[in-house]
Image (cartoon, rainbow, N blue to C red; front, top):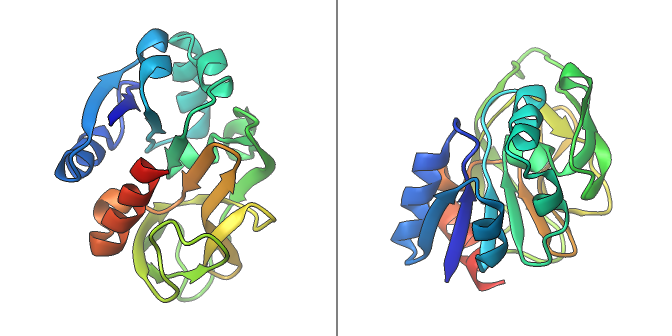
Length: 193
């Protein structure tokens, strides 16, 4: 199993690579469109701001490569947000692979922004290695709205899609590489999908 880990030059790429290697995946960090297209699976990681990330994708001429993939593509955290049509963060147009917009979380007593820490999942339909009640680790200030593509959600003042899927595209708002056994099961299910 070959996995192309899209290297935009920043982010949580090292911890994701380690988690995948623990599962026996052959991982290549790359920004080369040909290497991305040749891999069995592709992961778009992310930490940071949507505008900057989309700027890096465009500077590396990766937009068309990512949009036209017909193999499993997983976006993690900001990488998941980039799968949507747009983000209100910096007024960013994203990849448009999943319908919907990403918007800022609303802070409230007991719910600071960013949302950082462990939250319980409610699963829907396909489990992708996750079970109702699993706790996974989040670190984000923006999230997409709940909708028909949500496979799992966490409650953070509103339902926060933790996992979305549309066709070959999968997104995880949480960090599977930091989510202990539940995260490892999720990554294993992605590798097997």
